[in-house]
Amino acid sequence: MADTLLFGIQTNGIKHRHADPMPDIDTRFRMVKEAGVFDYADKTPAADAVDQFLRARDKYGLPVRAGGWFYALGRDEPLLEQNLRLGARLGSLVHNVQIQTNHASGRPVTDAEVVEAYLRAFDIGERVGVAPCFEVHVNMWSEDFRRVAAVGRAVEARGVPFHMTLDHSHVIFKIDHPEEQERSGIRAAVASGALVLDPFRPGSVAAEWIASGWVRHCHARAAVPNNPKNLDATDAEGRPGRGIQYPFKRPGVGEYHSPWEEARLEPWKEVARQLLRHHAADPAGTLGQISTEFIPNLDYGQGCRYSLFEQGVACVEWTRGAFAEARQGRV
Image 1 (tube, rainbow, N blue to C red):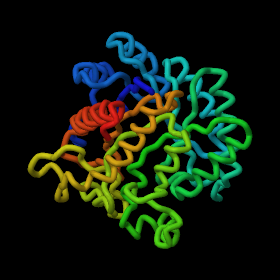
Image 2: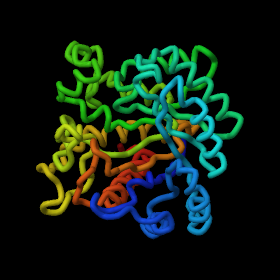
Image 3: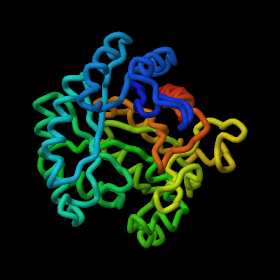
């Protein structure tokens, strides 16, 4: 039985309202330390901020255990290697990898190209001690969730373990959301039952990834089925954000643009419980850490009036409790 699981926070979420300035790096580490619920920070900093991160890491005794970035194949392979090496310098054990939907040439990337990119990154990671974890994420190759298992099995067929980052908010918000299912090309598969998004139904896609033992890293940002669009922010064409973030704890009056119902969080919590049960029973302890990630970007919390940081604290408090219950066989 796995008895260890660490909890951290992605540093873009270490602020309160969107309108508030981003605290400096030392202040962010101090906030995390004083919250008393986090074990580490999650970030791949810009080159000119690395020394500040190292100083804050050592001052507050908070490892930078994970980081991440996004990459276009055919252009950013050197950047991925650079960031894996930077992660090693910071002391990270995992690097979250987002592979964009399109190749640098403009065409969609193929599964075979994603497999080859994973194998290259895995080899580099083995040399420097940082495991690349390919993430399930919108606007990336994995937004068609069916591709994840195809890539994972192809990697394993090459004799290499497949490691992924599970951010199940990207799955949950598409439940009962025809527009979003259409956007990722999965609507017909969902309608036919070939692809199951609902974690309470047998054969759900997140349960498949978890049972396969692929989840090495997790991003915890709450979302609900048919998640409200982010009405607090619009893009250059005046369209609201896609809506892949839902407050984990009840926001104050006027702090959220839509009605908030705690019961709507149950599908998101169910995937978390499935992951925690799997980890509690996993003698290999494949899942090493969970990072909360309530963030102020357009499709998430841009314009928010609730505290991103307080949402992260509440989420990790619940998740710690759920893991304790999983170890006791109670969830």
